[in-house]
Image 1 (cartoon, one colour):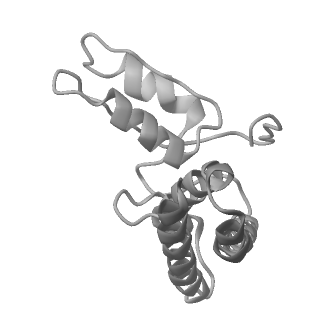
Image 2 (tube, one colour):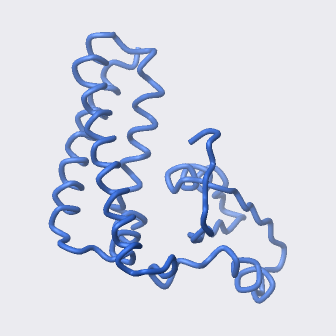
Length: 170
């Protein structure tokens, strides 16, 4: 029975979607850098909405139908409306820029990943997991599973090249 988990996290998702929507609406002409920074911020990034959404829908089949219908589904609907708004603003920001480049300094174009981070680094014994289209929420879950006292787990965002389309699993 996941009833209380769904109730708590559907409520949390709706509240965070409302806050993220207000933050997004306060940006008159958001830049690519601003949107990526807000989305990818470690502690309070908007990626955490994706994590809440994923966990919520995974538990619907183990929850009472009335809770899913009256709280779970409306939370998911609110999330998707916000995500669509974010995607539109992101596309507008790239269109206003006139080119598909940029982002905050910590964002690396995927074409430079190997040469700048692996070949140029003093990495010692290193395992590199390069995963196409891995969402930040899933990357953070993977990082937390791999993080152990004897290992240093490091993640880095990369900007993919266009066109980018991954129809399976998205």
